[in-house]
Length: 283
Image 1 (cartoon, rainbow, N blue to C red):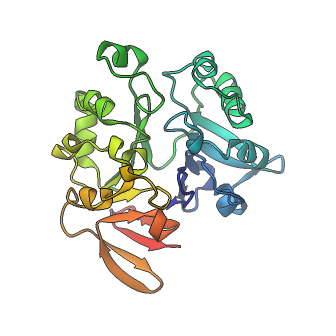
Image 2: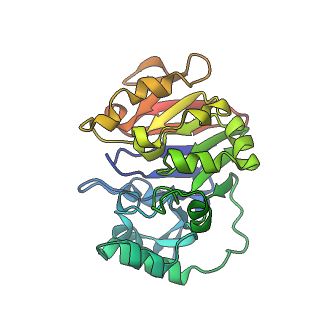
Image 3: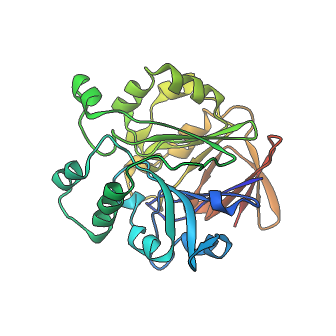
């Protein structure tokens, strides 16, 4: 079984993958946090230890905006990170140039980028990770603004016949470039669980995606609605869900849902079995 937890970190994002009985292949996709809540504390006691320190199998970032890595300084103090998948379409020097403020979190990210420079040998988790991103050159050639949002990584997780797609903060122009890639289109066709780009904001929505992607459920990681770009997006995304949605268990009640949002549903656990079944539970 693969457990996937979507943490409620309001505007940020943090998703944990935890294969049952194989904790050395644990994975965090982004490491946003909220006030005094850091998602790593939820699983740290389950992690294997090396020289007395818990070991996280992998940290993957979908992009270089602070809300996706705000908890990194806490994380590196708590655990050893075994492997990383950071976007390589920006160098450390690029990040220093682009970002206005060299925060402790950004400096920690740059330090990790400079130290983790090769592929880890023998790291073969029971799930498959497939990653795509655009390059600065691709954006420039298409007259698309070179921003961290448009340089987001798409992360596909395949396990038990199911596919999860996390889309970072891609915006409509970069989506249009992504859709030119045949391998991206094919994986979108296989996707069962789709994470709305840019926390479900309107500028991350691209209707053309759903010419290929017919998910059983759409996830939005976002804070309470305070911007016009958030309004009505759950209803818009719901129209793209295949079928009637999924069963969602909350407080011993089961409802049929097409869209799940951390703003109203809190932390969400998805249990995926090896034979392709899944269940959604509010924690």
